[in-house]
Structure formats: structure tokens, C-alpha cells
Length: 498
Image (cartoon, rainbow, N blue to C red; front, top):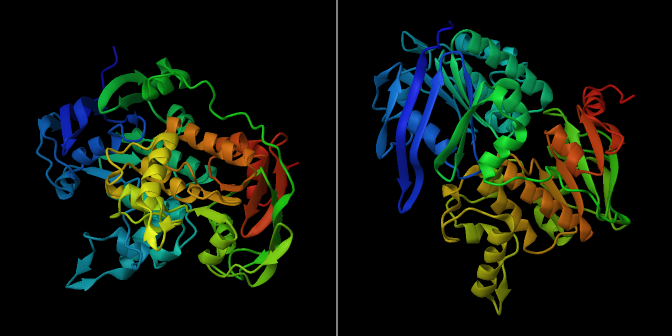
């Protein structure tokens, strides 16, 4: 008879409210040593809140937390750290003006005789970054890293804490397939050593690849716990959304028209080199590639956030000079950025105010409040944004609902060219289906769409063509009907898709 691994964590009948809104209602959750336990649910279901209670960021109004069988009052993140609990947050918690090493050791610096041991800290950081095959140095400023690279810093920092419980909240949201597989290898190594891992993710392929059990939350209550071996994709989706999703990716039936955007020999002198492609009205062109391949840099050039050193951009056949985002908006270009927290939203402003930032409705020199309210009402209904009141500060929304607000901001006035950088990052399976539906609707109306995504199933399921980048160069463009994940990854690694 096999013995059950010891329980590292028990959370019993956890309740939590924010004002009048009850977010968690009688939640039970447990974690064994050596287990990878998935925590799933739609955006706003309560997953992050439950984990923030375990890590001392929030306190439950009712319920009990036991660590190694002993009741614990975890009132601060320091309490959690002392108990051996580490977390990789979905929203990055790094200081942009400090280096990788300084962020890595923030609050636990190595000091000897009153002197900061920078060389020793850099060596330790380099070792942990090497395990993830990260291609940047410990003295790099955080602000100079992509979101995906910053995610690797967060992961490496948590793994270095020698914790017995590690919570991973959407750890792969900004990573590409090779980085994900390296992370999974580390997860398996940690589990074999008896570490318990809570894996919060919306990516079902990952859950079934790496996890042992799945607990699903829906609207603040537990919808049940299943062994991965005893369940399937459709059952988990049904538990999450309370209904069956008939199709994961909607059928593409847009009428592709004339060339809307043409890019010729585009370079920025740093990370984009001699790139040429076009996008037609009604077409979805996916930009794929590894972290640092130049995908986001192309988007920044097209939106005027950075400047090209050579090449030209044509819209409807006419050459344009896009120097600023204002110029881009004038040419009816919209851009949903990769980093919603830093670049897509003003967190202390309301959902309503954020939704109309790019195209503020003005009448006779005054903001047209009625038009503003009508728009956000339609956007909440269309995108199914979970918010108690449009006047609520956007920082109080879950990550996936914040992403929907960013998208709503650009749909107030119909763009002709829409750039989406990781549009479903941190969005649940139901929310993804809604965003895919909106993409389909926009393409039917003739909008030319460029979608940057690290999720290859999404790339293949949503786009018409895939342009693959490697180290700043365009290595190939594939028709989605003839493409597969292996061909895309071959081009992303600098090879060919034969």
C-alpha cells in the first residue's frame, strides 16, 4: 500500500470580501509534497485572491490555513517567506530603474562587514538565469528587458528562495515554447525533491502536461478537484464556465481584400533588420518568434513608439511617416500593448475613463458623458468585462478583465489597422473565446490585424498567415492552412520550414 505524501498546505473554508463583493466563499484547497496542483477558473473567479491569502498579501475574514499540519496566521509576505512559501506573480513586481541582480536580492541583500557583495550576488543570479537559459546579464536594467525576459527574472527569483511551496501565477504568459519547456523541466526537478507547486494558468495544454491535480474555482466557490488522469479538456472547461464551449477557435470566414499596410525593408538599427511584409484588409497576420526576436519592436515602429533607421511604411498605397502615437492614431492604427499594467492602462482611473482615453467623446468643447456611458455599457456587455461599476478603479479588476478594458479602449472608434501584442495574456478560456470572436468580427469589417502571440495553438487557430521572426530578421511567412507548430518553431530558430 502506497503512503499518501504529506500535506504541505491546507486551506479550510476560506472567505474573503472586498466591500460588498464576496470574492471567496468557503474555499477548501490543499497541496501535497512533490505535487503540482493546478488552480483554474475564469478571470475574477478568485484564484489570485486565494493565493494572496496564502502569501500574506490579503487576510481572510474566515477560515484557517495550515502549513505542515500546523495552523498559521500569515499576516504579511514576510510571514509566508519564513514558512517557505514563494510566489511568482501574474503582474510583474520589478523595479524598472534597478538591475536584474538588485531586483533579485531586494530585501535579502548579501552584506559582509557593512559592504554589499555585488560580485557574489551577480554570480548567484547568473547561475539561476543560466538554468533558464536567459540571454541577459545580472547588471541589465529591468526597463531594458522585454516582458518575457522580466518574467524569467521573476521565475528565477522565486526558484532561488529554496522554498518548500512555490505558487506560479500565469508563469508562462509571456514565454515562448522553448522557455516553457525549460521551466517545466525545473518544475519536475523541484517536485521530485518534494517541493509542492501551485500552478495557476489558463493554458489547458500546460495543465495536462505538467500537473497532477486540478482544482477549479467558479464565481468564488469551488467547482471541484479532479486528478488530471481522470479528467479531460472539455470537462475542465465546463467546470470553469458552467457550460460547454463548442469551439475553441472560431471558424475564419473573412473576406480578405486589398493590401492595407505594406512594410518594406524596415529597420530600427537595433532589434529589427530589413523586415518586409504586408497585411490585407480583413486579414489576421500573426507575428511569431522567440522572446527578443523583434516582434514587439516591429509593433512599436508601426505605432511611432520608436523610430526606423531605414525602410518605409505604406497605408493604402501611400507612404506615411509615423513619428509618434498621435500620427499612428491619425492613420487609424490601434495598438493593444503587451504590458497592460505599465503601458495600456492608468490603474487609478476608472474602467469608464480608461475605455475612452484614446478617443474621448467631446461635444461643444465638453466631454460627452452620455456617449461615454453608452459606450462603456456596450463594451462591458460585448466583452463580458466583470466589473461591479464602470466607475470602479481599473486596478481592482483581475488581469484578464483589465486586458478586456485595454481592448475596449481601441474599439470606441473603428481602427483600420489593429495591432494586438499578446491579446489573451492572462485571459481565461471563456474570455479568450470572446476576444477571438471580436477579432473575427473586426476582420469581417475589413480591419487589417497584426497579432503577436507566443501561444502557437492560438497563432494557428486565429490567423490567416504567420510571419516568423528570429533575432530581428523575418525568416518566413506561412499560410496557416499549410503551417504547423514544428514549421513555425524551425523558422523561429533560424532554420527553414521544409
